[in-house]
Length: 400
Image (cartoon, rainbow, N blue to C red; front, top):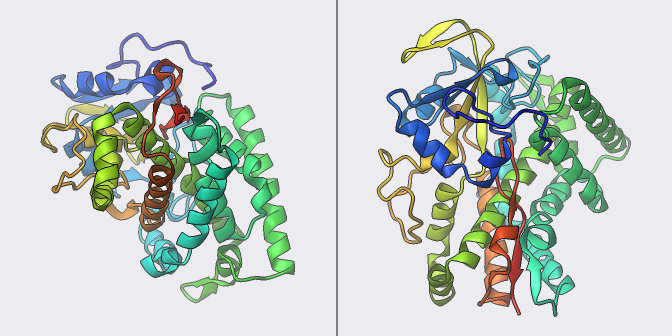
């Protein structure tokens, strides 16, 4: 959080997802907006941004690729420089028909069989992390554990130096969380990221190996090699979207179990419930809010949307909509009917969902195996990230 904007006083007409109040507790804000006659908030911040809070409206926009473009999915003070249909981070920033080929290209790398091969590496690393804090009475579930896991897994997939984890986390903060920085500062951060990625790509060109970066450099789409901007943009997507989202989901799950003893005890006693519980954690604490840009001036259910205004797609709010889910604000570990939107909706549904689920499952299995009893050491000391990916960044848990 950078605090470059004044605090919000009326969420329906001055919305700001980077506000510290929103990061700390967004649930009453969503409920307030959904309860209005028009469940769409608006703000003049960021050059104009809309916030539909219901599952129905979020879904409608997510599936409408003609009136809402995906060429940038992060709300910032400026507007994206990369034109459609590719955008800056394909395939998530791509519109049809380019999107179809760009997404299809990645699917084999994230198939269940491919992800299965990464599970032993992930499990060993989770144990390594907990070995490193053995003997402590209080462990930070975010700083000491959850934030490391997807960083290491993505670095291994891309063939990047595993020791660059701190660098990756800085990029995540610069790009995904510091959205209210002046455009000049954000450009500096992007240039630093670009320089790092250029060096990694050049190393892979000089020394090809069996990893996702070399795969992208050798790949073809529609019979032609991928453009350098396509390769670089996809690596940015994997490096950033594959890290912050998953560590937020793992951290939120640990936060819930640390604060709800009955759910923790049930999962320890019934480990076979974990797959269903993971889906419920994803629904209840979905970390990701995406964005679209309005293609042309239009009226959207009475909202006068203007060309190039932002529209946020708060999948977390959609998942808490009582019109879409029974007992929407309760966490029900064995919820059977759970068509949540944590991985998005429409053509941009997360291609890495198999990877995220595996990392969550392994991280929670290892934690529960090592610490069947744990609780929040300081509930007031938990700190949540702001911006479009929400999860605990400081999470003191008592394990002694």
